[in-house]
Image (tube, rainbow, N blue to C red; front, side):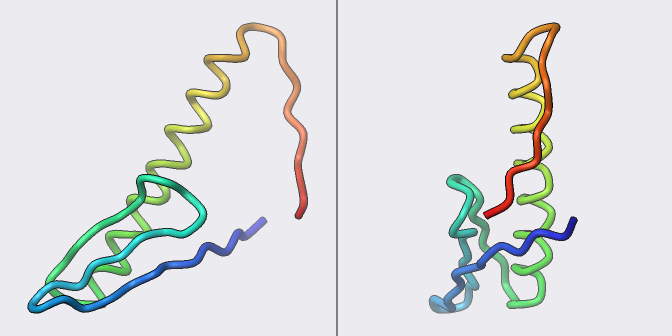
Length: 70
């Protein structure tokens, strides 16, 4: 399943700054728009993987995984 996320980006002086709307804490800055978008993607992937691992650890030994569609 491919998920779509929204990047909010702006140029401020010599820097491009961006945030991912749907995931708190995913924000980056780079010297070019292209670099920013790539860094946001990598940072988002890392944050989602960390959240997955954290949720599984918190659930303990017996848990179920269910898909949620919005």
